Image 1 (spheres, helix red, strand yellow):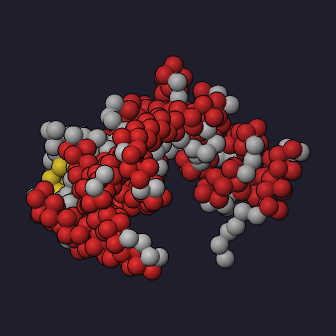
Image 2: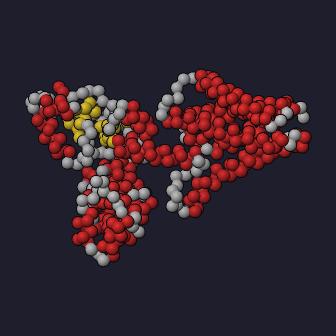
Length: 449
């Protein structure tokens, strides 16, 4: 049966912390998975969580810390000494350790790295900190198993046993030359079936997928998804093997990017959490609300320009929200599909073919909705010229909104700007303005005012 963190368990942990029942706490939590320990920590207050981190073995708490929300982890680390933080980092993979160090104030980070006893581990952490966090270099871990092409199978097995002690999961065995340049990979089956006197150069597979240290994280994710990889080696500009990106790291990256895109689409310009301060949430949300305000004011000015029309045809006013809503909905739909396609690298072909496709889709949707509007007008005894005005306006607005929703993300992407910006208030506001203008302009032509 799967282990569950229950209210009873949390109450028991809290009680043992209160009475300092250290032995019972260690016995209770020693066999629990680190992810469950992290879930327990989430249910404790800061003082209790810090107590538990200090009490338990760093081998378990180091992994539990990485499962916590960043803000809570930072607050726990603030309550640990430099030596205690260093002990946690010693047990982490280098990529996780680098992420934690990056969260620390610069002065404290230097002290913590200096306190790490394993000099190689400390150097690897410092190396990873030099890379942009959203590149392969920033995502990779230094822990891997590599063998020289000049080794014999027997020597390779001995060296692999030594290296594997520091690697949590051995996804692949990488083959390098004497300058540590990546040459290929070694199949475990070939390793087991080959003669112990054979050389690695005789049995390794020269074809291997890899990325360079400055490859963007999105590209790393695309390659790993395309070739169904659990890990991918990372090389520097000289072809030297410097690390590997594993599937768990890329999943975390994809999750973070999806959260950012979701917030951008909702009109939130910064990476924030529900528990952040009022000021942080306001800074993230207010800019887009101001944009929406100016867009709304723009619509007001457009409607004022057609004041005579509204006085003569008051019914136009009642259909304005419908036109604006259709423009916003179509624009968001189109931009959402394009942004998803750009993220998955499936937006192919020329802009002209994309234009024709969007116009075709818009015509089908616009004509269908226009016919429904005309039928609605017939049922409600609406004048035919007025029904045609609404239907034709809706058709034109849908076409324009679809084109804006399609090409704005593509243009932003070509200029190196996150296209997810285009799926939120930006598209909605711009389409509202264009939609209302087109509505009244077409009404002016048909109704003659």
